Length: 428
Image 1 (cartoon, rainbow, N blue to C red):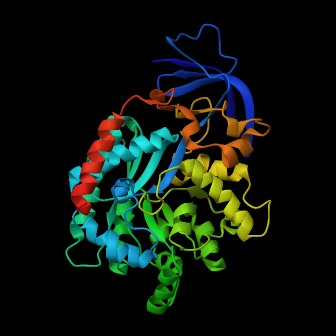
Image 2: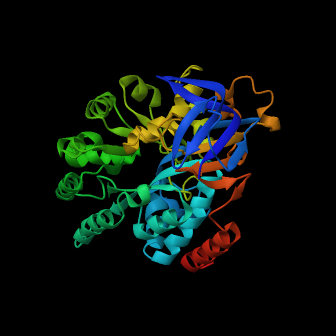
Image 3: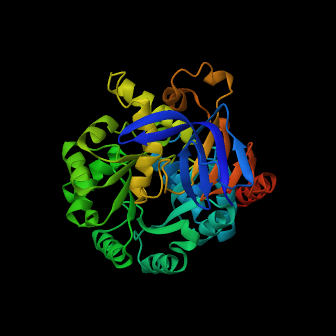
């Protein structure tokens, strides 16, 4: 179906600079065909009047564990290692495929309602999350979580291989990545197998790196090097790699990330809530590292709100660096859009509103008290906008939400079934 979006303020990127201009957008099928003054003979049965709205690229949540929303508000105010070992890992042993599916549907509702059109997920029962994504119309980049802290985990590599065969490029909206959890849960031998699998499949690697000081200290004690230097020496970065967190990184680590083309994913809320530390985002950006943005899981956040992440991503770094110019609004908006697309290797198709790119578009309602007066729309997106301002969401030219109403998810059913699944797991 062709769609015409009229009278919008449109966020575009002119080279490296973000611009706002008043324009119409023509969508033909899955693709943006015109931006500006749309030709009079453009045929459509669907017209969206976007007066008092801002059209921008759909947000990309570049690191999450979607169905961990089942553990939302379950284990809080705890150090990361206690949180993992005493609360999260034990309850994950009881996870079922159905629970993951229910959590995924609810998580996708939250993502769509907050303007996210694509997400990178690392978790278990990945096929169920993929099925949820295919049903709801969102883009899914899936890395089945891999560990080998115990013997007998080779089947996980085969699961990834089978996921790739069955789902990679499914409906043009699913990609399968290889997902080693972290160097502290994957032995060098296993990481070498992971790298080989990535090369075999021709796909990217997604991994947690240097999230905590404890992780870095123990890596230096065990291997004589930081986690980043450790996996670099193992050859992991010879494959396209998306590294979540990168909080405790030194200058050599940043040089390795930049030189190897590793894409870092900043998760400010989770890092703050778990007291993991402050990622040196300004230094990474200046070194040429592509930094994307993610929420992490809703059990350590405790939501999937990318507008909240954008807000924190800027203001935290200003404070930490004692520099009000550090990590400005425009840089953060890029982290949540085009940098996310670059991290996923899809920047030629997604991440910006351009003729010929996929029609992954969101409309922000500007008629809100907290956005008035608008003055600078870029500042408004980063510092004032809320996820609840997202009016319409489109993926591949298909409307997933319009006038705040989800079109592909029964939200009441999703909430009921997720609550039921959480009760069974937690025993409440």
